[in-house]
Image (cartoon, rainbow, N blue to C red; front, side, top):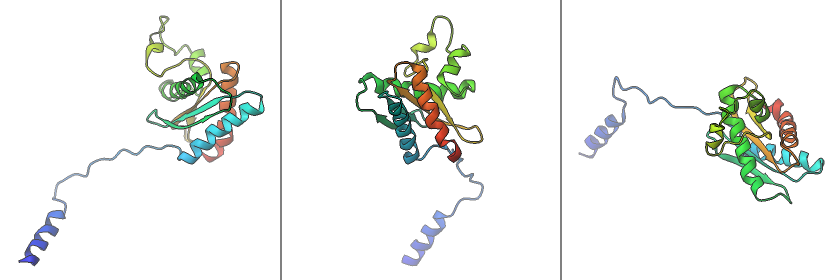
Length: 168
């Protein structure tokens, strides 16, 4: 009797003919250690230039993957760095741009009334860069906040990303 139940159970585990496998979605993203290194490098580059900043990396889902805060940055830099990273990722992908300053320069920040600026987490100011693989696939964003000007934030982010490029 036990043999029959075991055999019936094993047969039940076999795939039924004609059943299609469920398609899976594969998402490429930075390993957490690499994301943390990227954020750390951005903070260090700015520190070497005399600026205390926060750096945030977002993954392909738009969530924070790594955040590194300098020693003397104001509280709002945490939110601003994340929003710059999110904007660089989401709109960099949508408009094929590599930095928030490029999105702004191309007038991709929405209509004159600024409607896109009302989208949660979007922030159209310089300081974010789009993270791409060597093949051009967008896999995240890096945002920096705290330097005296978004152009300086973005320069630190771009320098940190340039260090990582050979690994992508």
